[in-house]
Image (cartoon, rainbow, N blue to C red; front, side, top):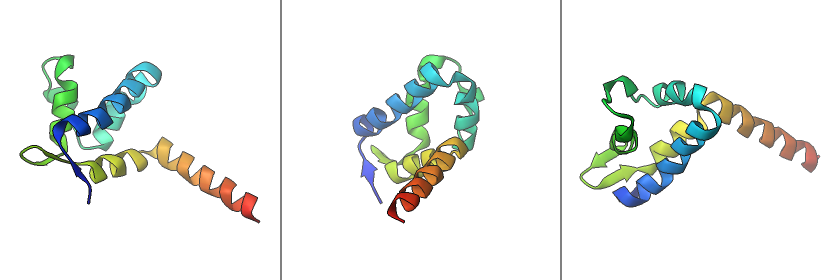
Length: 94
């Protein structure tokens, strides 16, 4: 299990959220729902990163990065792409 301090967890989450905001804004809310994060609880968009990081906090100052990556890798578009890449790799090996 990988646990990181807050600064490193935010450094992992910030680019993920920024990528959604810049390239796939329509899927940001569904992605957050997939992660079990209730965005409707936020009063201001500036609270998104700290609240989302808090969603993964497992104890004071420690964040579960394995869960962050699992949520990301099981997001259907990402999971589908991983599967496609595995198929490509297998076909190249044969």
